[in-house]
Image (cartoon, rainbow, N blue to C red; front, side, top):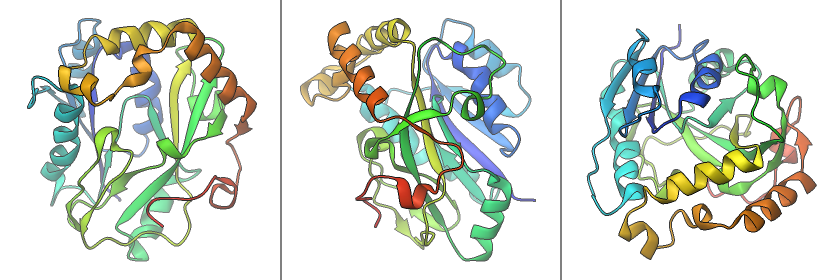
Length: 259
């Protein structure tokens, strides 16, 4: 059986956690989650799950949330060496998807693939989904978005360093890096789940940024006005496709930084 570990960060993500575990638990064995002082019940929810290791997120740079998160993304997965065949490095609202992920990973292993990029989609819904939803199935409408095309699945024993850029939008992996011939995995980014909720979440996230983040304009969307965010919602709606059943390798926008 293919062993998969997942590494991520959490802050007041309780509304998203049911969706997250419903999506990943069928094929992920172990979760390593760095919590940044959640006070909405997220930490208690995570600590009650036997397959989750929870620890307090360490602000390695007190003036930068982005740099602190990058440090975790660059290093947390290394504890899975010798214990997992594949690791996932992602966010709570990013659902990495393939129609049959366990089989896909097994075939990738047989073919000598060690790193699997995912093609990004900005997913959207008018209202927050019901708790029992399986998001990729029940809310499949999204717009292809290169900014969310990321390298988030790789073999921890083959990759020496992942070297993420800010936000993990780019990576410079070192080691035995071998990509698949076709890009079939997608990164479904479930952030735009209701305009008012997204605006409120942005305002909360902006207050958590550090001086370095603001100086470098990292997290700039968190400072958007409701009109600016609303305009982006409409831009996404204009480019929507049903992400189910697509030949993503052929249909998704180019170029791809790993090719």
